[in-house]
Length: 278
Ligand SMILES: [Zn+2]
Image (cartoon, rainbow, N blue to C red; front, side):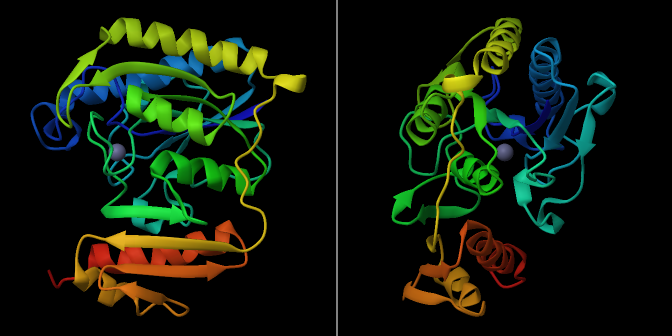
């Protein structure tokens, strides 16, 4: 079995504030150790369940320098490199050769109440075929474009709820409950690691035959709607060929499939993110 591990940071145990997930802050150093420990626990579960090849993508922030690589098991392969240069963003490396994907440390979409560090990149909202989704939904849809199911998600309770709605049958671990955007009631860090190890193992061992989780598919033409925080971002996004401007801050793209829609999404959001005009 070949498994893809996509790891974000806002949804790990005992992390509640933005400082904890911002590299360079004093609190970040502890958080990245826990981040690494949760990913290592997932890898241990995958290995014990018979996975022979495991790829790990550091998919938080700039997408490098968050995981402590030497503390991960040496048999993993690492997807590394700046987020803006990865064609598939958080899911860079995904293709149809994988049997399954798992998401560690995820958070709920922007605008979710009592969700730790809820956000959707730097957007107000994202919709695919009229359905609101956040980063975990988009990761599942990108894996689904290659017929790869997401079989496990960890994060806060709100992220887990979102995952269960988006991916019927997915195994989950909620490592904390948001009491607001930057406050949480968390499992002890070691308890979170044990739960992740056990449930990831179970997700692989139990997910065979009829119990196999289905890939998240958007067959046929796809309409992707992006709502930015600012009108300037809407102006920039409109430079992407094929853009429909719905209002000052909202654009949409019609594409032949989810992968083509995602390319337009990347172009529009990168223009906004890297504009020198603010
Ligand atoms: Zn993140």
